[in-house]
Image (cartoon, rainbow, N blue to C red; front, side, top):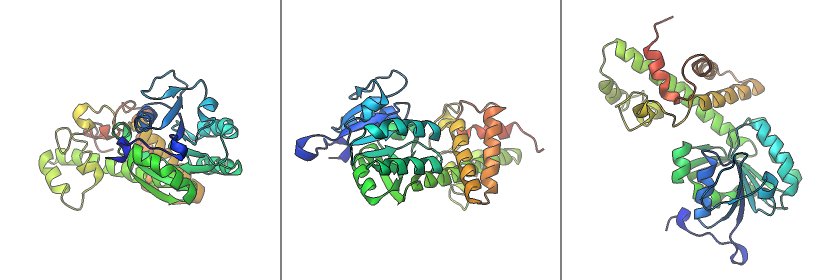
Length: 305
């Protein structure tokens, strides 16, 4: 029987109690999968949402109080810091705070230190896999924290995802996520540019895909998430670029990558250029609310400047 389908029991036959804060497009299906697996899940969101199998709390503190683990899925580091200040005093000694948000490395480390000072375990564990992966329980977790903290969180990762990598100490999960997504943003732009160039050179898109997908231009952006409609596996391009991973979320991650690069004096010119292009696409063009692969129709319409 798959782990995510099994009822997980803990000490004295009592199912582990989970507090889940942030029941949005990602958090809600993650919490639902935990409840389905037999955990006692109490959830809170600023919006009044109902999640199957999840007991609704009146506040974040209520969701956190008495929980063995508290999972957060939040928009940014400032909200994480403010929430942590509220819930950490209410959490029991030895409980784990597992943040699955994508935030800046500095916030992740600051919250982890605050949690550890209070006698808690802390894990920063941003995810890859999008809403589809959250629903299917096939997310990948990139985790930072102590060995003990990761060990406590690992059974939950097994339910919510298909892979969890312990990347290092506090903040390492966020570092891995922003490095990964900087690569993704850059390669998607290059893939879209290449298709637009191929069009102007009179090269058939399917032939382009057949060559590049099996040659040195191979990438996840080309092979698994092709931005050209009707080419390769099904992707948001085949659904009028409705978001699987929204362009504004890519912009957020690229901004985080450049914030981190500035903090450690790393030279990332391609990451900086990708951030600038996605910022223009989202804020002054038609990219807001579209998938990040909608860069292809953007390049199709443009001439060389």
